[in-house]
Length: 180
Ligand SMILES: CC(C)(COP(=O)(O)OP(=O)(O)OC[C@H]1O[C@@H](n2cnc3c(N)ncnc32)[C@H](O)[C@@H]1OP(=O)(O)O)[C@@H](O)C(=O)NCCC(=O)NCCS
Image (cartoon, rainbow, N blue to C red; front, side, top):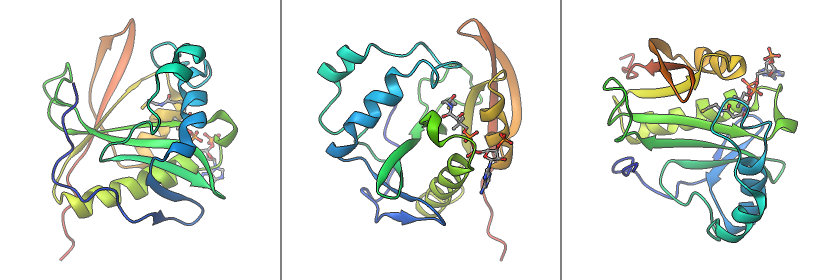
């Protein structure tokens, strides 16, 4: 089980980036969460997609309602989510207990830099809420788009390991230190 991220103010005031708004999830996002979680394309490098009918029945009225789970919105429509969690149960000791970044975007929103823009804003938010907090990220090394995103966000390789029948990449974003 993932524990709470920490002592953060939630829900946050919506965060505006150049093109997006990041905010806590709402009931109106449910259909897009179903789409994300049921999409085989989104799950190419993740555990298999979930059954759409089961999601329709079982997903809470407001999905992902927890501190650190952001919906990214473009022109008023959800296009993806950025999830900051505390990885208490992570199988690698270097990551266990650290803040952990995940992201899922709709395929129609890929290739425009939206995921980078949204994740960078969520990490800025974390830096403000929990200064000095390192962040980890686990992705399949074959997930080229995700690996590139990790690099752009400033994650460096800690290690590669085998899990879920594939090579996984564990990256770390060191704590941001004040320039002063
Ligand atoms: C991982 C994922 C979020 C990456 O999405 P993405 O759209 O490729 O990521 P970015 O937002 O960084 O966009 C980068 C692309 O936009 C392009 N781009 C276009 N306009 C841009 C702009 N204005 N600014 C920045 N990049 C721009 C970049 O050139 C780059 O394209 P390229 O990869 O062909 O070089 C997406 O593939 C996804 O949701 N995958 C499924 C979920 C998943 O695997 N998650 C990982 C596990 S946590």
